[in-house]
Structure formats: C-alpha cells, structure tokens
Amino acid sequence: MRARRKCWPIMRVEVAEQSMVPALRPGDWLLAWRTHRVRPGQVVLAWHPQRPGFLLVKRVAWWEQGGAEGAAAGWWLASDNPVAGAVDSARFGPVPAERIVAVVLVRYWPIRRRR
Image 1 (cartoon, helix red, strand yellow):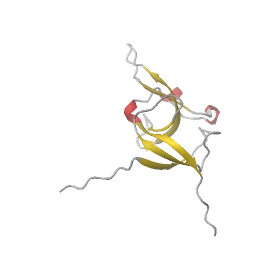
Image 2: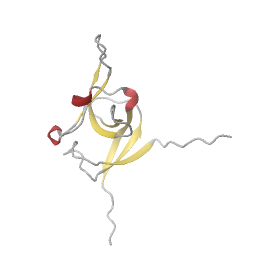
Image 3: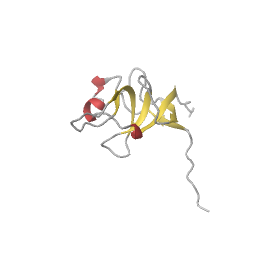
Image 4: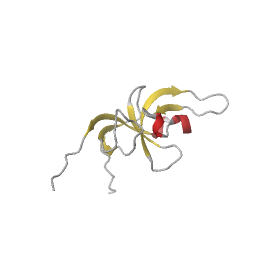
C-alpha cells in the first residue's frame, strides 16, 4: 500500500513584503483556501511564473485572453502598493490559472509570546 501525502484544503502563510500595504502588512498571517477558481478583486496566493518555489500574494485584476501573437492567457495579478517596487503582472505578464494556489480567506496577527 502506498502512502499519499495529505494536502489540507486550508493553508497558512506569513506576509513578508510591502507589496500589498495597506491591506496586508509584513508579519500578517493569512489563512487561504486551496483552489484554482478565482475572480477579480480576490487576494490570492500564486507561484511566481519565473522563480520556482516563490509564492506571491496579489490581488486578481482581470482575465487576460491569449492573443494571436502567442501571448499567454491567464490572470492579471496586481499589487496594492506598486510604489514599493512590487513584482506583479506588470513585470511578468498574466499568470496561468494552474499557478494559482489559493484564495485568501482571512488575515490575522500571531499571538506574541511573553518572555
């Protein structure tokens, strides 16, 4: 009998950079639902199309149709704070639907332990 790796539908991630300020700040924690089904306006987790293993937190802007010139189809992901030098679809183009990992459900702050 082969063991299967368990993949929970809910995942937890920590925000590390300033690209989503003021909605999300570094140190915030997110609970997200694993899915590829998204719609504009939602905050999602997605694999960076050019950096393997790098997870992005971005807002879904729109669906980009593939063009006749060979342009890729996918979701246009935007940063809430582009002046922070954010890396989003303005730099790497639309993100294919299969690279979307999850939709953010809730933001919370970790309980600080007393020393």
